[in-house]
Image: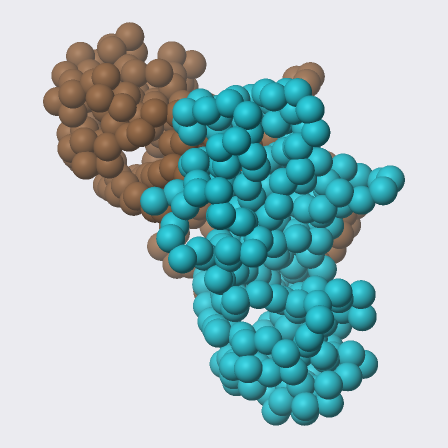
Length: 256
Length: 256
């Protein structure tokens, strides 16, 4: 059975997250599996690079599936997009990959972007696509706070108590914070890169750094919170609306 | 009566456009006037820099209104935003201005941005916020076509037959076309600047340049279409979804 990799974009709002869950909203995984079943009847189970939470968006999720037929990848993507309509899920790239490619286990890197807006007036075009706060934020202080988190660390403070990872020790390779013009306010984009992330890690980090930007936390308090290795030392967890899984990296780019 | 200028952002989809119209969808103007009436009962009539069409967005519309009370501008914006909820309209700046300031007649410049996406997969996060086509486009050819339109020209070809302007002769100061990365495709941003625009001028220009980018029109055919001074020579008019009124310029910035 040939194996295919898919690059997937989705709007997180109408879904319970990537993973299938009992009851409630549909999952992105389920929607893609059902679209696959329209092409080749039967049960399809797909694996993905990142198990995004409810409300979290993706522009570069990667998943793989085994199919019976030898599909031309352009036609496969077109057919899936047809069956995914009108759900806000799009297959933006598709390629046949070696049998040992695994979207989750072969991934060497994940990248997330978080969009944080500071302004008094409510968002219009960006509603649901950003986290909005009303107080001005200091990018330089957020960068100072973020610097404490880079490298090999015990991220117990910055992971959900529900996190199922064996170890809280992870290497965070990058947090870059960009400040952009935004009508009537400020926009901050946080770019995070790591081999893998813990459950709620990005939202815990961004929620904490927002406190630093607002002046409620000193940048050094981020180091203290990390050293505490205690979930209670974390700042507030940000809402999911501003978070995007933008890329997964593999030894060889499956879509190249 | 003190006069106030407002910078206004809105999502065009739920409105019949800026201007009040009999029947159908509400207008942005009406929504803002009704919010003003919640602050100071009575009839309010506001004038704006650009009378955007149904479905057209704004990030930098400017309007003015006369009020009875001496409002602190921060509080006035906050109160209006409160009463505008949950409509996708936001007052992003507010300032008291001289009595001779007129949002429409004092404006020396308008700026529009048009977002055009080329990819096969349907838009998710950007649905309703861009014009999407499926064929690849050539930015350089679109730039060559656009160059024919710069300067003082008779834009009869590029205005709606409904256009009420006295003259079709206008000076188009700039069309800058930027190409950006977009997941699974291309994004083109058209930046247009002029003292004033004719009805449907931007959408007629972008719709025509898209034909050039797709290879159906040669860049020189844009010059021929312009020279024809005939609406029938225009390419297709683009949909409103990708169009944003981003700024109006005045002798002195009212919000500075």
